[in-house]
Image 1 (tube, rainbow, N blue to C red):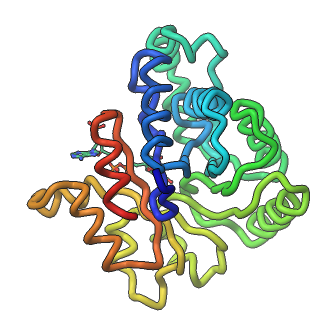
Image 2 (tube, helix red, strand yellow; image 1 turned 135 degrees about the vertical axis):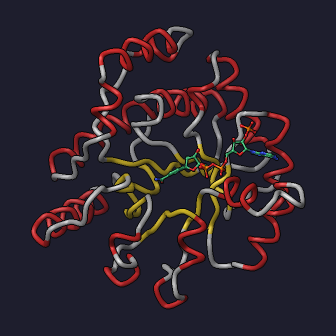
Image 3 (cartoon, rainbow, N blue to C red; image 1 turned 45 degrees about the vertical axis):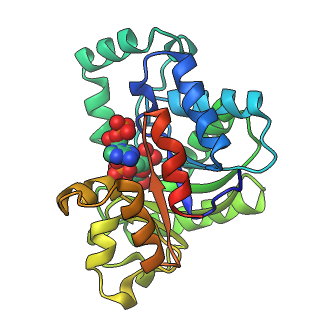
Length: 257
Ligand SMILES: NC(=O)c1ccc[n+]([C@@H]2O[C@H](COP(=O)([O-])OP(=O)(O)OC[C@H]3O[C@@H](n4cnc5c(N)ncnc54)[C@H](OP(=O)(O)O)[C@@H]3O)[C@@H](O)[C@H]2O)c1
């Protein structure tokens, strides 16, 4: 299958699939359909998405692929056993202890946290480098010194060959348009991007929340057709798509050649 570079396959819900076999099958189906850009984060299944993507990449031996991951939501990474059938039990315990809630309520973007988080992601993925490294949904604007340290660290990681690009992923309203701040790569909700004045839209943004927008609009046409229309109307952007249903993967991949 030809690879599509305008669609990124999101693995934010991979941990909702119960078995390692089903998770591998979904990633393999995406790769088979030409979806070889993958979006993960340490926070997705507390390491599980990165771990399972790494395993699949080793088995599938793809010649071309790209991995986008993130940093900043300080969840506890589950032990390797959680990537087996043990995930629901480990998650239940974590939720009961309040670990998940407290992780998602905080953010850490200091230089050491950036480096350590990336190191952990690369280890779980079994890679030397990722294509994109995003600040994951900051919950307040950065102070000047803090932002300077982020930029310096990210540029160092690029020079060291650990990442190719960096950016910010999440709702951007509070930053008054990242294009104005000069953040290199932006991943944000589709509805928010559409509502921005064109001069504040980051060129080359990656947009998520497509399915929510499709449903909000009445889900008139099929979802793959909605994605196609959107892609034709906005040729400079990339889109995140996601499904846990293997049968839906190929029609989605075919929506944007
Ligand atoms: N801060 C961030 O950067 C951020 C935030 C949110 C998400 N993300 C990334 O973006 C990815 C996508 O997240 P999203 O929130 O944008 O989700 P989405 O793509 O808007 O929606 C996913 C939903 O679409 C459904 N779906 C897929 N194909 C369909 C079809 N043909 N017909 C009907 N329903 C269909 C899926 O259901 P089934 O599974 O049942 O098919 C799933 O419930 C995530 O996995 C994650 O990687 C990033």
